Image (tube, rainbow, N blue to C red):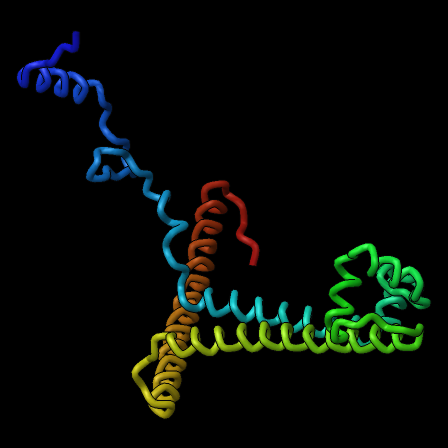
Length: 228
């Protein structure tokens, strides 16, 4: 049989459970459900400041441009990539494509060979020269797709930078007002620097006076002549 607690017993049970619950430590917050949440737990969900976000996006744009240039170099001048690799030929470079192997792969339903034939119009090349032309055209299309992809990525990053810069809070001043404010800050900085220099000179002077007094008192107490 299922036992049902009366309302009073349920209330007492909740009170006993509440007395066993420790108070949240300092630096923790309590959610509406009564669960403790660390102060720094939700920091990762907070947005970073706009300046840091712009800097990170610019870094990402620079990396995208570098990868784009390197990808274009490898596509249009693979011999440069070979030179940077110490003269080793990359495994992807096929200087002498085998026409018979291609036909065999196509008739066996190879995915890459089938895709190459589909791009050529659906008919396999009849001669080795046609096969070489097909490879050149496929490589050209591949390079064009690479250029489009890299350009889209670079333009997307650049647009993100422009968007973030446009959202930065302004100073509410014209250029002339900003230059005037800069001059005022420079003058204030110079005044503070002068005050600091005067305080430093005064401290040096007082230090020398204290040293002279201590020297004279010490010499008098020891009964020795004070050196000039």
